[in-house]
Each structure stands twice: as structure tokens, then as C-alpha cells.
Amino acid sequence: MVKPEASPIFYSIVYFLLRFVLLAYSVPQTALITQIPGFSGTLPSKHYSGYVTIDESHGKKLFYYFVESEGNPLKDPVVLWLNGGPGCSSFDGFVYEHGPFNFEAANQSDDLPKLHLNPYSWSKVSNIIYLDSPAGVGLSYSKNETDYITGDVKTALDSHIFLLRWFELYPEYLSNPLFISGESYAGVYVPTLAYEGYLVGNGVTDEKFDGNALVPFAHGMGLISDDLFEEVSNACKGNFYQPLGENCESKLAKVDADISGLNIYDILEPCYYDTDTREVTDIKIRLPSSFLQLGETDRPLPVRKRMLGRAWPFRAPVREGIVPTWPQLLNSRSVPCTDDEVATSWLNSAAVRKAIHADEVSLLNFIVHITFRKQLPYEFRNQTGSVAGTWELCTGRISFRHDAGSMIQYHKNLTLGDIEHSYSGGSLNICDYFMYTQGYENNLTFLTIKGAGHTVPEYKPREALDFYSRFLAGKPMEIVATRYLGVPILADLGLADEANEYVNGIGWTKFVGMKQPIFIQLTLEFISSLQVNLKLRTEISEGWNQGTGVNVDVVTEPIEVGQDAAGPS
Image (cartoon, rainbow, N blue to C red; front, side, top):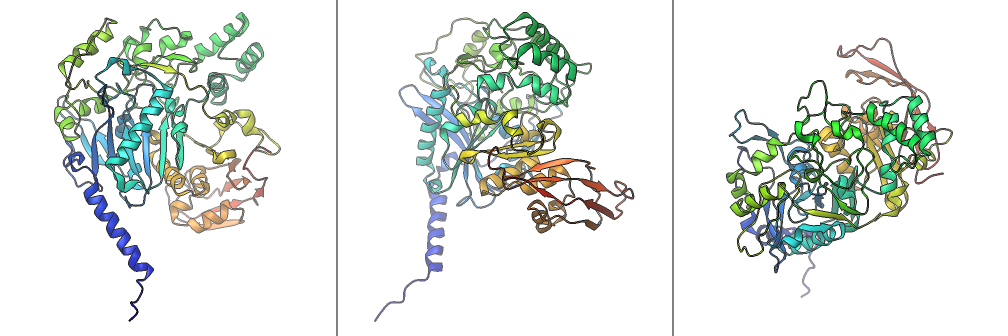
């Protein structure tokens, strides 16, 4: 008698049952977080945390916090998040950007922050690992002081070892897509770890291009006048970060004066000013005079929540050699224009550290840390216990060397000149536009978001989750562009089909009956997508009145479809 063959559905059920069993029993249960101080609700997914030892002989341990996807953890991508700095903790992203919680500051200084679920957490669509790296940063540490002398290549290698050993602990995720992401200085080593792909926010790329970016940016954002921009351009011949003559130096001094007091993480907001940021450490790095007044405003209020990583001092790009961290650059434990008291109080709580399986602060480490601040010798080679320190946003504990160079050559193509060529018949100043995307070779996409500061998920959490979701799913960004431009906000009105038709080149002459006001009136704006360049003009009828709920007529000129934007024409 011939036995009937099992159907494909049967095998699919068996497969998912097996993966469910693996998920239940493979993960290290000692790493499971069962309660989170400050949070009283029900977690939408499981959280795990702890240490992965990457060098047994040195006792080098990297700390991670793993948040399972709120969607389908068996299938959703695994994303490794790396901080910037160098020397800044990835809990910065966890607390202030795209982590599972929104942190509400406590009324009393001794109380813990109150945690609320974050509706725009990146764990909505992915499993995400927040890693403190290298050793000496955040909650990660080593018992051998030589591990605190590190650099780009060593940091990347240690992160790679971490991933290999992490997957030994969590083998059920081996078949999930793996992406690497990070911000700011992490742009140097994130591409070296790319698997399915990588995502870098405002990343450090190259000495020449990063160093020359400030002056054109300041001009594009209206921070310096057209006349001054022309003067400094003529005097410096495009070389702003390494001026060769007194005339260039004097013009750059005018630029420094005009932008002094600037919040380098978000020029639209004032800057929190810590009085000791004037005390600049004696480090061999070129600092313009305006940096000494960094943070000064008429109203020195801590309006900023925080940022991840950090932007470099004006006209001081990352060069080969020792890269000073913020605490080394400034004799201050704070990062300019930031207020990280919420994260600091939460992560240095004994109850929190116990709940997330982080080592307690050792007395020895506390003493070592204080003496290091005073530039005194330190020694802890013979210790056998934990040397975990207090959590800091960015640490001066490590000595970091930029030794990777420009890792990805085509990152250098993200210059204004290259971007201009993608538009036929005109140049582009990306500072003027609401949203911009550009495709390059090797599947590289450059995307900007209007109104966001250095850390996009902090300033634009909803938009960040939207483009992050599309990136992981391999979807184009067209509806994102439509929404950010405010041309009628079709996706938000449940009109995704109309939005897709609109951005794919099907123009209409009238769109009536909208009962939700359009918040942005456009005159002449551009959209560039990976498929086509679209030029449009939108006119809103004079009968529209924001907030009244009246019907709105939107008249649109036919869309002009340009050349393919897969690369410069």
C-alpha cells in the first residue's frame, strides 16, 4: 500500500513548529529580562541582555541588549546597532532614538525615569541588538588595560567576533537576514561588517570630504551670507579644512564667528551650555575659535533630549591617528549641546543593572576612572573580578586610533557635485528640499530628511521608522518622499494606491474632496526617486483654511519624467 505524501502545507507547519521550539529553548534563559525598573506594563516582545566574552585570556566582555521583533521574530531581520563617537554607548540609541521605550524624566533626582512603550521603536519590524563597543564603552569592559588602546580595525574585528559568538547563543536566528546599522563615527566600520546590507546615519566617511562640508552646509542653510560664501570660496579655492594662506584663514575666521554658539547636532535648536566646555584639552587637533564658545546662547536651556554619536568640531575632520573622544577633547564629562541625565540615572541604578544582567560598578573601577580624569597613572592588571564602570554617554577611558582610512570608495561620491549631475537642467542645494533620495552603484542609496538633526530617529521618529521599514523590506522610498513633501499626504489618508500612482508618473489635474488639511503649501519642489526624477508644482486653492476641515482643491501640473536616477547622467 502506497503511503500518501505529506502536503507542502504540512512541511511548512512542521518547520515553523520546530523553529518555535528552537526559539523557546535555544535562547539563554539566564539572559531573559523578566522585569524592567521604571516600566509597569506588558512588553510586546521578549528582551535579553548580558555579556559575550570575546577574549577569555584578557577577560574582554562586550555588553548587548537584544530586543525581539514585535512582528515575527522567526522571520524578521536581525539588526546590529553600533554607536558613534568613538567611545559613545549604543544605549544612547536605545534610550533616545529608536529603542522600545520612551523615557520620562523623574520628578525627584533620586527616582528612576518612567518608561512608556515607544510607538516608533525599530523593534516593530526587526530584531535589534544594541552593542556597547569597543571594550571600555558603556557597560563593556576588559580586565586588561591594553584593550582600551584600540581603533577602527580592532573595533570591527571585535564586533565580528561578538556576532559569531552571539549566534552561538541564539542559533535560531541564523537563517534571518542580518543587517548592520549605526551613526556618526560608526560610519567608518559599519560597512566592514555588512551582510545583507547596512545603514549609516550621518556617518564619518573621508577626511577631505567631511572636512570641506561645513562651509557649503552653512551657506546652504542660510547661516552665512552669499557674499561671505563667495569670499571664502575664492580665498580658499575649495580647501576649507586645511587652509594654506592667511587670506583663507581670515575668511574662515568670519565663518567661525557667524556660526559660533551653533548647536552642532541641530541648528534649529539652541544648545545646552556647560560652563566647563571652555576648558579645551591639549590635544593635537585643529580647532577654530568658535569651538571655544560652543553652546553659548542667550537662553542656555537644555531643550535637547540627546543625540547619538557626535558631529566633529567645525572644520576638524577625522584624520589618520589618535581620535580624541569628547571627554578627552573637553575637560568635561558632558557632551556639548546634550543632556543625558535620564539615561545616566537609569543605567547607573543598581536595580536596573541587576535587571539587565550588567555587572555592578566596582570600587576599583570608580577610583581608576577618577584618577584618569586627572591625567594620573592607573593600574588594574591583577584584578580578577569585574571592572565594569559607571555608565557614561561617551567615555574618555579609551584611546582610539583612526586606522581604517576611507573604507568604502563610493561613499566619497556623496558630494554636491555628484548630486547635481542627477538633475537635468539645473543644480541642487539639498538644504532647500524636504526630502531627497539618490541611487548609486553597488546598491547604495543616499537619503535626506528635512528638519532632522544629526540623529534622525531622535528628531523624526515616525519618518525614521518608515524609511527603516522600507529599507529592510527592500521597498522604494517614494511614498516617504510624498509624505515628507506634504503633497497631499495620501499615504496618511489611507490612499496608498493613489500615492503609488502619483509618484510613479501618473499625474492628475484635480484632486478634490479632501477633508484633512494639507499642512504645507508648496510652490516649486523636486522629488528624486530611484526610478525617475519628478518635477511638480502644487497650488492649493485660496479657499483652503488650515484646521477648518473644508474641502480642498489641489491642482497639479503634469509630471515631467526625467532620466533614470540610478546614477549620475
